[in-house]
Image (tube, rainbow, N blue to C red; front, side, top):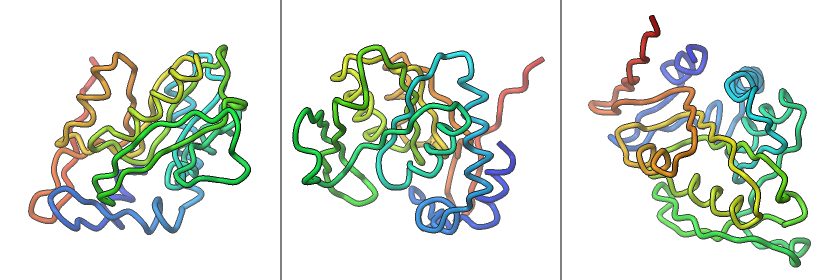
Length: 195
């Protein structure tokens, strides 16, 4: 997705060989026009999958997730990282370790919002080590629903998460795949040319 790659090149800040800061348009401040296009792209890529719900994790997955849900005309559900007084009965939980924040979170959703007959599209901002995606897969399985696919805004393909998540057998679509962040420069993975 060239629009996203151009935004990463223009505003992304490489903090190390493993960390890309994109808080000017995705993780803190949100570019709504870009998110609208990202949602449209996810809706296009998964249009034939019979999606009934979009599921993400708070907070950085909400903007692209809600735009994908908008274009698919389905509800968005987001897994909470913090306990809520209103989320007390019928709760599904999974443990997710964040390498960026160096902490483990227990993510949770209400069984009320993901049902056995749902076909769920998972959306997340980054795929690096794969823990968030695996946690979301676990929640969908606990609900007895089906994972219809996984949409990732930015994948760091030099880390093991993409391989780990793809080994689950689910279809993964990443809008921007980063090959390397070496020497302070973003290098994108070359897209396959279809003949």
